[in-house]
Image (cartoon, rainbow, N blue to C red):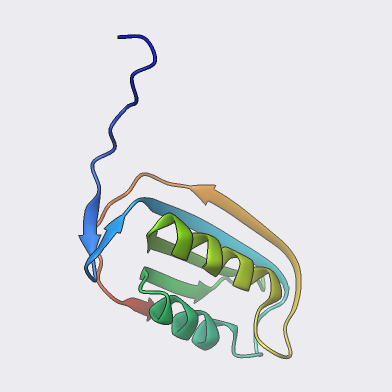
Length: 108
């Protein structure tokens, strides 16, 4: 059927329909400034599920699932980061939805 929309099966996380999953890598002065903790707090405030961690090369990596709107808000927040951070670049990739996580954690 021409023009038919493909239906995406959404899952629920914290009562929200999960419509998006992103992998985000933030570079700049982003370690030693509370970036992971601030990201966890912001993602939790937005009702997202996922995790954040430091990478050995000085960048910060995060994976988040939730509504498109909440994901966009988190990515916008990552472009600024917490006070003391100096974000140089934010690389964002959309990944397939898993819907298996609940909560947003700091990985070590």
